[in-house]
Length: 314
Ligand SMILES: Cc1ncc(COP(=O)(O)O)c(C=O)c1O
Image 1 (cartoon, rainbow, N blue to C red):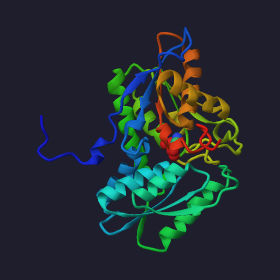
Image 2 (spheres, rainbow, N blue to C red):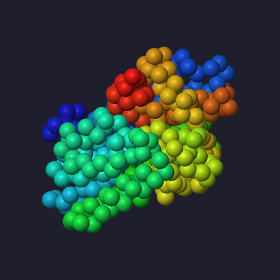
Image 3 (cartoon, helix red, strand yellow):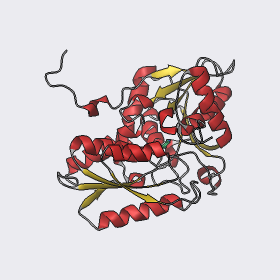
């Protein structure tokens, strides 16, 4: 049926394809399906949570026309929020750092965001970096009438990612043995897990983090360079009852996998996607044929062309 009014670009968020890896899954493993979230308008699954954070706040009356939205970001949430704020007409002030992809910082500005940069230690995500960004954003939001979206503490994020879980249920008719994903705010993993836990028996749900910063699996924070995950602390939204295990993934393997995904499977994505697929292949080996393991291609590789993942700085 034709719609009477043309759809908003915000309606282009979600309903992403689910595809099967055809070449890199070894024999006798479970099949591995990947949800291609880079089909969303800003090329990242963060569009889902940005829309939910804004629209849920609007419904409660906490965010009203004329107000400024404030957030801290590694660049992906900021890009998605900048996009949603542009469409809805809110001013957006965002705190980020030179540790994150230039493409993301630039994109936020193109969407009209007011970008405030906090310097990193040599471009690395050290344990103190994200807390410094949070502090700065809190100061900015306290100084003016604003709505602080505060992604690590905002449970509207879960509402946004439940949509991803529901799509997976429809696309697989509930045939899911395992699901894994990297943890930043934990919003994606927890939002999806809230839906998948309704299956009987529940799929095995695994939280992934950089092996060099095993905060969830080992209680120790370290340095790494996988953007968007491994914030250096256990995120408040991570709920132990919604996952079965946490695993550290080697960053070098994650990077190599991002290259293999592009050159062998045609899936051009970022470093955290490489990590997700390394995790999924591990689960698929353990579960064996006849099972289905699912993970997520978080964002497009186009966001990483100038950085060290695809050799732009060589
Ligand atoms: C590239 C990338 N991968 C993974 C994640 C982790 O997602 P979540 O915050 O939902 O745990 C993020 C979050 O910022 C991200 O930007």
